[in-house]
Image (cartoon, rainbow, N blue to C red):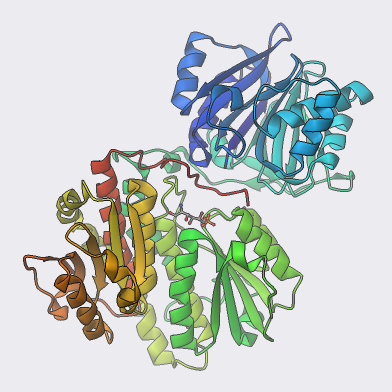
Length: 609
Ligand code: M6R
C-alpha cells in the first residue's frame, strides 16, 4: 500500500528514484510523484495521476537534476486519485514528505495547524505531516529533532521519507507499523518500502523496526529506536535479482507466476524434505519441541492466505487428528479469544507485511499460545522477524496483485505442517507414501498447465456475464472460494464461492441461463453428493463448467462443459484444482480488458488496517 523510494548520493538520483517506483507499483498505482533538491538547492516536484509511466513521461519532459530525493506511488486512503493528492506533499518550498500508512489523528492535527495559519491543498493525511514537520522545524531548527517530535505526535501506522532544503545533506526515515528498509551503498544510501525497489542498486539492507528513525546521510546511517536511543541494526544481504522483477516472455506477471508454480513447488519441496520425511528444520531449527507439544492449532490470515488456512484445517484434522481453528485476521484481533492449552498460533502471508495479520500476531504473542509460526514468502518480512518460527515458501517474488504461486506454495507448507503434526497418527510407511505424493505434485501441475488453451477458449463464455458461482465440497470448498476471489479480483465479475450443499439454502435462487456455475469435482467420497447439487443447477437452466477427472463419470453435454483433469490423490487435489481456476480468471480478465496485474482499487501488500 503505497511505495516509497529515497536516495542520497553524489550522482543524480532522478532515474533511480523512478526506476524504483516502477518496481513498487504493485503497492499502489493511482498516482505517483517525485521531489528532489536540485543543484541550486531548490525543492522541485513532479506529480501525476495514474501509473508511474505517466510520471516517467513527465520527467522526460521536465527533468530534475539533484543528488537527494524521494518518490512515491500511491494507493489512496484519504482523497480521490488526483494530482493534488499525489505524494510528495510539501510545506511551503522547504519540506517534502512521502508516506505509506494512515495517520489516525490527522483531523485533530490538521485543525490545529489550520488555526496556526497553514494552508492545505489536498485531502490527504500526509499533508498534515508535512506542515507539522515545518512547524516543528521552525521551533527546533533541527531537522532530526523535528522529525522525532512529529513521530511522537502521530497515531496510526506509517512509514515516512522526509527531505528539507534547509538541511540538504540528509534524508530522514521514520517507521511505525508500515515497512521501510534502508539500502546501503558506497558513498550513497537509500530508502524503500521493499528491497525490490533497489535491485541493481544495492544488495545490503537494514530493516527498520517499529519506532525507528533513521538519519540517512551519504556516508553515514544513524538509527534511533523507539526510545530515542542510538542503536545498531543487522545488515541483511538480499538475493533478489533483476529477473525476479521482470516479465520475460510473458504478457503479464500473473500468467508468468501461474506457469512458475511447478518450479516454485519443486524449490519449496527441495528446501523442506529429507529422503522420506519432512526435514526437522523445515519450520525453523527450534520448532521441534513446540510442534511436538502442539495439541491445538489456530490459523489467522487474510484473503487468499485465509483460503489456504481453510484447506489446512481439513489436512490437520484429518492427518494429525488435532483440532484446528481458522480465522480472518481483521476479525481475530477484535474478538475475545479463548486460548486452549498447547495451541500453536499460525499466520499465513505472501508479503509478511499485511497489517491485520501482523497485528493479530502481536496480539497472540501477549496470550498463552505455545509458539507463533508463520508461513511466509518473504524471509526478511515483519511477520517472519516477529514470529518464533517460520516456514519460508520458495515461490520467488510475486508481483501480480492476484496471488497464485504464493498460494500453492503456502498450501504445500501447510500440508507439510499437517504431516509433521501427525507424528502419532500416521506411521512411517504412510508418511513416506505422502512424501512421494508431494514429490509428484509439481509434475501434476505441469499437466494441468497444458490445459491452458482449452481454458482460454472457455473464457469467452464470460464475456458478457455479470455474476458467477463457484462450488466445491470438503477440501474443495475453499478452492471454490479462492476461484471466486480470483475472478472478482481481476475481471470485476461478481463471483461467490459456496459449499455445494449450501446451494439450496439461498444461492439457488440466482441460478438461470445467465449464471455460469463452476464446480471443482475430483472423484472422492463427496463426489456423488456434489453431482446431486449439480443436478439442482441443471434443472434450473444454469450453465455448468465442471473441472473433473475421468473417474468422476461427469460427461460433456448441452448444459455442461467438462474440463478433464488428471486423477490425483484427494490430499493434493486442492493444490492441483486451484491452477485451472487461476487460468480461467486470467483469461476472463484478458477478455474483459482489465489491468490484470494492477486491478483497480487493490494493492499487493496491504499495510493499512
Ligand atoms: O500478503 P498476504 O498474503 O498477507 O495478503 C493477504 C491478502 O491481501 C491477499 O491474499 C489478497 O487477497 C490477494 N490479492 C488475493 O489474490
